[in-house]
Image 1 (cartoon, rainbow, N blue to C red):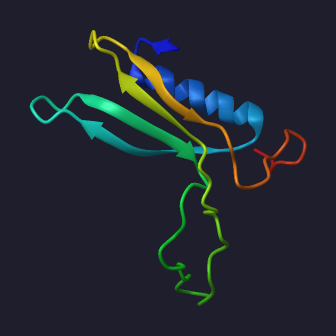
Image 2 (image 1 turned 90 degrees about the vertical axis):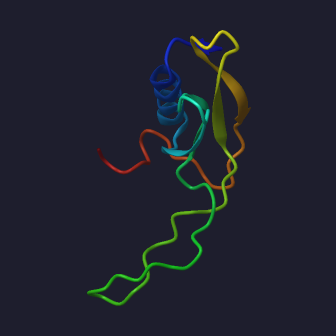
Length: 108
C-alpha cells in the first residue's frame, strides 16, 4: 500500500489501531545523511518495549502503572524508490496484551 506522504501512512496506522482497540506511538526514524530525508518510519503499539527502570512519582513516592508490555505490533513505512511516496515495508499485527473494544475502553 502506498501513501503520498509520510503523514498519510501514520494516519492510516492510527485509524487502524483505533478500530482494533489499541493506541500507537511514533518510535523511530532512519534518515538519509546528505539531505535528512526520512527513509524509514516506525509506528508501534503504545505497549511496545519495556521501561528500563520504573518511574517513581515524586510527590507520592509510588511507582507508575506498568504501561509497556513488550508488544511487537508495528508498522514500518519506507520511502519508495521514486522518492515521491511511502509504502508499507513491514507489518506485524500480533499483540502481547488484550485489546480494548469500543465499549470497554476508557471514555474519551
